[in-house]
Image 1 (tube, rainbow, N blue to C red):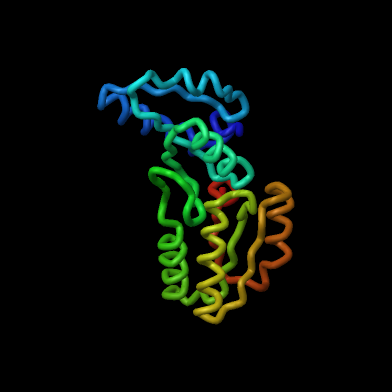
Image 2: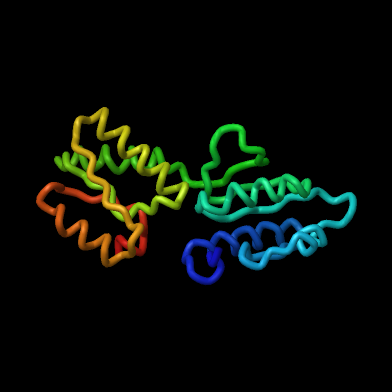
Length: 182
Protein backbone atom coordinates (compact mmCIF):
# COMPACT_ATOMS: atom_id res chain seq x y z
CA UNK A 1 0.00 0.00 0.00
CA UNK A 2 1.26 3.42 -0.96
CA UNK A 3 4.47 2.08 -2.51
CA UNK A 4 3.80 3.85 -5.78
CA UNK A 5 3.87 7.29 -4.22
CA UNK A 6 6.00 7.09 -1.08
CA UNK A 7 8.77 4.55 -1.60
CA UNK A 8 11.90 5.42 -3.53
CA UNK A 9 12.70 1.87 -4.64
CA UNK A 10 9.32 0.96 -6.11
CA UNK A 11 9.33 3.38 -9.08
CA UNK A 12 12.78 2.09 -10.07
CA UNK A 13 11.56 -1.51 -9.98
CA UNK A 14 8.44 -0.60 -11.98
CA UNK A 15 10.53 1.26 -14.57
CA UNK A 16 12.75 -1.81 -14.99
CA UNK A 17 9.75 -4.11 -15.39
CA UNK A 18 8.08 -1.76 -17.88
CA UNK A 19 11.30 -1.47 -19.87
CA UNK A 20 11.72 -5.23 -20.12
CA UNK A 21 8.05 -5.79 -20.98
CA UNK A 22 8.19 -3.09 -23.65
CA UNK A 23 11.32 -4.64 -25.14
CA UNK A 24 9.40 -7.91 -25.47
CA UNK A 25 6.32 -6.12 -26.90
CA UNK A 26 4.17 -6.60 -23.80
CA UNK A 27 2.29 -3.96 -21.90
CA UNK A 28 1.68 -3.51 -18.22
CA UNK A 29 -1.04 -2.12 -16.05
CA UNK A 30 -0.27 -0.89 -12.55
CA UNK A 31 -2.96 -1.58 -9.98
CA UNK A 32 -2.35 -0.12 -6.54
CA UNK A 33 -3.21 -2.43 -3.64
CA UNK A 34 -5.39 0.21 -2.00
CA UNK A 35 -7.63 0.48 -5.09
CA UNK A 36 -7.68 -3.10 -6.39
CA UNK A 37 -10.96 -4.37 -7.77
CA UNK A 38 -11.43 -8.05 -8.63
CA UNK A 39 -13.25 -7.29 -11.90
CA UNK A 40 -10.56 -4.81 -12.92
CA UNK A 41 -7.92 -7.40 -12.16
CA UNK A 42 -9.67 -10.10 -14.20
CA UNK A 43 -10.22 -7.71 -17.10
CA UNK A 44 -6.43 -7.37 -17.42
CA UNK A 45 -6.26 -10.84 -18.97
CA UNK A 46 -7.85 -11.89 -22.25
CA UNK A 47 -8.91 -15.48 -22.75
CA UNK A 48 -6.05 -17.72 -23.73
CA UNK A 49 -3.34 -15.47 -22.32
CA UNK A 50 -1.22 -16.45 -19.38
CA UNK A 51 -2.32 -14.84 -16.17
CA UNK A 52 0.64 -13.50 -14.27
CA UNK A 53 0.83 -10.62 -11.82
CA UNK A 54 4.03 -9.05 -10.57
CA UNK A 55 3.45 -8.34 -6.89
CA UNK A 56 5.85 -5.73 -5.50
CA UNK A 57 6.09 -5.33 -1.76
CA UNK A 58 7.81 -6.26 1.46
CA UNK A 59 4.93 -6.16 3.93
CA UNK A 60 3.77 -9.39 5.59
CA UNK A 61 0.60 -7.51 6.48
CA UNK A 62 -0.63 -7.50 2.87
CA UNK A 63 1.52 -9.61 0.51
CA UNK A 64 0.32 -13.07 1.72
CA UNK A 65 -3.31 -11.93 1.48
CA UNK A 66 -2.71 -10.73 -2.10
CA UNK A 67 -0.99 -14.00 -3.06
CA UNK A 68 -4.04 -15.92 -1.79
CA UNK A 69 -6.46 -13.58 -3.54
CA UNK A 70 -4.62 -13.83 -6.86
CA UNK A 71 -4.34 -17.63 -6.56
CA UNK A 72 -8.12 -17.89 -6.08
CA UNK A 73 -8.51 -15.93 -9.33
CA UNK A 74 -6.14 -18.29 -11.14
CA UNK A 75 -3.45 -15.63 -11.51
CA UNK A 76 0.17 -16.69 -11.08
CA UNK A 77 2.40 -14.47 -8.96
CA UNK A 78 5.96 -13.28 -9.45
CA UNK A 79 7.08 -11.70 -6.18
CA UNK A 80 9.47 -8.75 -6.14
CA UNK A 81 11.27 -7.78 -2.92
CA UNK A 82 9.41 -10.26 -0.71
CA UNK A 83 10.71 -13.49 0.76
CA UNK A 84 7.79 -15.90 1.09
CA UNK A 85 7.72 -18.77 3.56
CA UNK A 86 8.16 -22.30 2.23
CA UNK A 87 5.36 -23.82 0.13
CA UNK A 88 3.78 -20.52 -0.91
CA UNK A 89 2.30 -20.94 -4.40
CA UNK A 90 4.28 -18.41 -6.44
CA UNK A 91 5.90 -18.70 -9.87
CA UNK A 92 9.09 -16.98 -8.79
CA UNK A 93 10.82 -14.54 -6.47
CA UNK A 94 13.07 -11.66 -7.48
CA UNK A 95 14.94 -10.05 -4.60
CA UNK A 96 18.38 -9.16 -3.41
CA UNK A 97 20.30 -11.87 -1.55
CA UNK A 98 20.15 -10.08 1.79
CA UNK A 99 21.71 -12.97 3.70
CA UNK A 100 24.85 -12.75 1.55
CA UNK A 101 24.79 -8.96 1.91
CA UNK A 102 24.70 -9.08 5.70
CA UNK A 103 27.39 -11.77 5.68
CA UNK A 104 29.65 -9.64 3.47
CA UNK A 105 29.12 -6.55 5.63
CA UNK A 106 29.88 -8.34 8.90
CA UNK A 107 32.97 -10.03 7.47
CA UNK A 108 34.19 -6.63 6.21
CA UNK A 109 33.54 -4.97 9.58
CA UNK A 110 35.39 -7.76 11.39
CA UNK A 111 38.33 -7.43 8.97
CA UNK A 112 38.42 -3.71 9.88
CA UNK A 113 38.56 -4.61 13.59
CA UNK A 114 34.92 -3.73 14.27
CA UNK A 115 33.58 -6.50 16.50
CA UNK A 116 30.44 -4.84 17.92
CA UNK A 117 28.12 -4.09 15.00
CA UNK A 118 24.51 -3.06 15.55
CA UNK A 119 21.64 -3.62 13.14
CA UNK A 120 19.88 -0.30 12.62
CA UNK A 121 16.45 0.80 11.41
CA UNK A 122 14.84 -2.55 10.73
CA UNK A 123 11.07 -2.53 10.28
CA UNK A 124 9.24 -5.53 11.76
CA UNK A 125 6.58 -5.36 9.03
CA UNK A 126 9.10 -5.86 6.23
CA UNK A 127 9.93 -9.35 5.02
CA UNK A 128 13.30 -8.18 3.71
CA UNK A 129 14.22 -6.57 7.04
CA UNK A 130 13.19 -9.79 8.80
CA UNK A 131 15.58 -11.73 6.53
CA UNK A 132 18.40 -9.26 7.34
CA UNK A 133 17.68 -9.48 11.07
CA UNK A 134 17.77 -13.28 11.01
CA UNK A 135 21.11 -13.25 9.17
CA UNK A 136 22.53 -10.70 11.62
CA UNK A 137 21.38 -12.72 14.65
CA UNK A 138 22.87 -15.91 13.19
CA UNK A 139 26.20 -14.11 12.78
CA UNK A 140 26.04 -12.81 16.35
CA UNK A 141 25.59 -16.36 17.62
CA UNK A 142 28.37 -17.77 15.43
CA UNK A 143 30.84 -14.90 15.83
CA UNK A 144 30.20 -14.34 19.53
CA UNK A 145 29.17 -10.71 19.60
CA UNK A 146 26.22 -9.22 21.47
CA UNK A 147 23.40 -8.58 19.01
CA UNK A 148 22.04 -5.05 19.21
CA UNK A 149 19.02 -4.37 17.03
CA UNK A 150 17.51 -0.91 16.85
CA UNK A 151 14.11 -1.05 15.17
CA UNK A 152 12.35 1.62 13.14
CA UNK A 153 8.76 0.80 14.06
CA UNK A 154 8.05 4.13 15.79
CA UNK A 155 9.56 6.49 13.21
CA UNK A 156 13.02 7.76 12.35
CA UNK A 157 13.30 10.19 15.26
CA UNK A 158 12.57 7.48 17.82
CA UNK A 159 14.91 5.11 15.98
CA UNK A 160 17.73 7.66 16.12
CA UNK A 161 17.08 8.31 19.82
CA UNK A 162 17.35 4.58 20.53
CA UNK A 163 20.63 4.50 18.57
CA UNK A 164 21.99 7.50 20.48
CA UNK A 165 21.33 5.72 23.78
CA UNK A 166 23.39 2.69 22.63
CA UNK A 167 26.40 4.36 20.98
CA UNK A 168 28.81 3.29 23.72
CA UNK A 169 27.79 -0.36 23.14
CA UNK A 170 28.68 -0.46 19.44
CA UNK A 171 31.61 0.26 17.14
CA UNK A 172 29.84 -0.05 13.78
CA UNK A 173 26.41 0.11 12.26
CA UNK A 174 24.57 -1.83 9.57
CA UNK A 175 21.55 0.17 8.44
CA UNK A 176 18.85 -1.88 6.74
CA UNK A 177 16.97 1.23 5.63
CA UNK A 178 18.50 3.69 3.18
CA UNK A 179 16.51 6.68 4.41
CA UNK A 180 17.50 5.97 8.03
CA UNK A 181 21.12 5.65 6.92
CA UNK A 182 21.02 9.12 5.40
